[in-house]
Length: 366
Ligand SMILES: Cc1cc2nc3c(=O)[nH]c(=O)nc-3n(C[C@H](O)[C@H](O)[C@H](O)COP(=O)(O)O)c2cc1C
Image 1: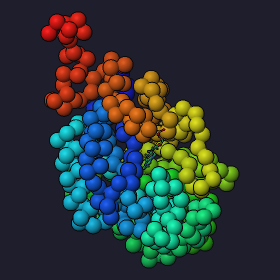
Image 2 (image 1 turned 90 degrees about the vertical axis):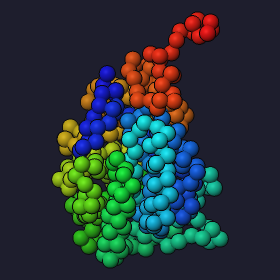
Image 3 (image 1 turned 60 degrees about the vertical axis):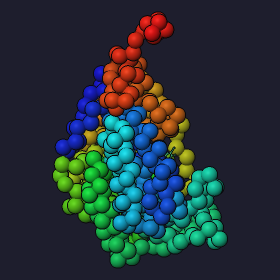
Image 4 (image 1 turned 60 degrees about the horizontal axis):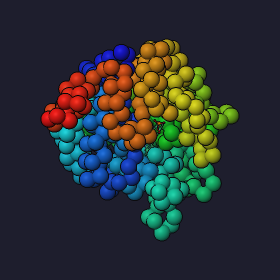
């Protein structure tokens, strides 16, 4: 069984290759996770996945996507996370990672269920920042082009949030370098039109995310896996391609990353991702083969059979699922049952294991 074989990332051993993909809940208060997160993450810590990645958690206040996004920029944020993490460790079995992010020009937005566009003047919007003063799309805020001082400030904010994540005892840390957020905005020629050392050539466009990795790696112990979610394709003419993803992964490996998570899309408001099953897997396969970094992929992976095949065929070392996990928060349990494997369970739920479950006829007599 490939999906249910263990994997080691730095000093962390995961019992299987299933990852709960980070999912914003837009339910925080000035960055502090709430009771919603106790329920949501507590539930997914019992999904059977080896690793549960906490939603995009922003490294500064203006780096949040919405007023409801989580952050790790204050002592209050850290204390609120401590409560949520302690709960998940008591209530579930998954190892717990966190995704650290900065939304760049996609910040100051409405929650998806409030429209998902830019915050209106009456909704406490803020000045966004980006490599260049180009909005994400029509009707979006025009970001301020970042000075080198801004760049240094955000890089240090990543390191400071990473220190908090280490103090909180997260098992792994993932940097969000995809989906059109700040680091992706630096990497993509679509959003980065700078003429200084942070723009132009791929080497220059990689500079900000690479400096971020170096600053974060310096504060995250070697034994704690550090990874990044990167863009496999911008899905737009003139944008990033799989070749760029391979080059980026190789550079990040040299900077000390332990794993790469291949996603794609989101660089402008009018780009669309493919809708075919496992659409990022062919790119992940190339990244994995050519960079030699442990690789996760995500994107329309729905059935246990698909997930098992991705690992068995060497397309990825791990698979991340988002919507399928919301649909079935015991996805990992059910995948194990279908594929004849077992998952860790909390003692309270042990009797639900198919191995311990008496046949229906016996139960009827009891
Ligand atoms: C409710 C929701 C919130 C999401 N929030 C994040 C996030 O915080 N960080 C991230 O990298 N991706 C986020 N995504 C994208 C997912 O992690 C995943 O990459 C995408 O949904 C494709 O995977 P799927 O087909 O398994 O849903 C989110 C997706 C959903 C549905």
